[in-house]
Amino acid sequence: MDKTPYEVVFCVVNAGYSEQVMDAAREAGVSGGTVMRAQGTANKEAESLFNITIQPDKEVVIMLVSKAIKDKVLHALYQSVGLETPGSGIAFSMPVDGVAGIGRKNKTDKKKEAEAPQDGSDAKSEEKGE
Amino acid sequence: MSNSQISPSVSKRKGEHLSENKLKVLVTIVNRKKADYFADLIQSFDVNMQMLVAAEGTMKSLSQDRLQLVATPKMVILSVITGEKEKSLLEILDERFKTVRDGEGISFSVPMSSVIGKLVYGFLSNQEDLIGGKKDG
Image 1: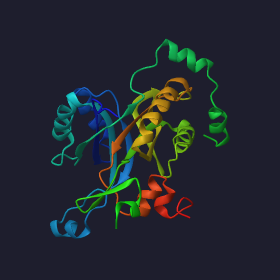
Image 2: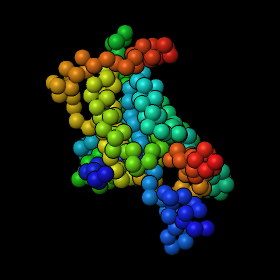
Image 3: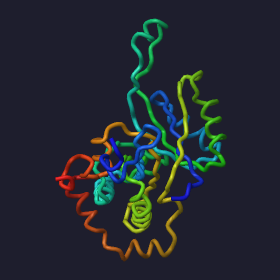
């Protein structure tokens, strides 16, 4: 598959700083992201040696961004939620091979959505109490 | 060990066993209530390992029962797929994202650079001949 013009940016920050991540990313041209809660695993020996406490609660923000603005996004994240800020964040990007779901629904798609049987997916979700 | 002894799909080069069929991690982000539907769809492409992680979208929307902005509940589906299935899987996902009600989402694949263990590779790529399954017997 041809390489796409996208890369995925991951930003791991202390819990509560994901909004700051998105604010910085939006200013760099990112339209949206997804936030996952996570737990950091700090080195206990290093913590006692340096007499610091690493906040274990983390948030991981995933953003699919255009390669053209990737460096700008990473730079913005470094400035606003980098390791020297209270967010203590790290950000990195990874290459993406294939992408689906980029681009909004057009009129034809909406018509298809109305006509298409939902493959029992609605009923299935309801059965599972979601 | 010669190439033929390993598998037709695994070749040996410069002392390493290199697969012709690379594994990739498919990241699919969908509305939480449609997660099972999309996980089942991906699994139908001979995907043996999936991991679902609860997440939230960063776009706030107005809550239906309360007048406040709430984060959209999402699910991140991490699946290990083979390179040969990638194109068809992304095509069907793209179509379903557009046609299934509340099924909007994005999906992208990230190449894996290495996997250790023939058994693990066989499991992730769904090749029974690599894990001493029916095809060997």
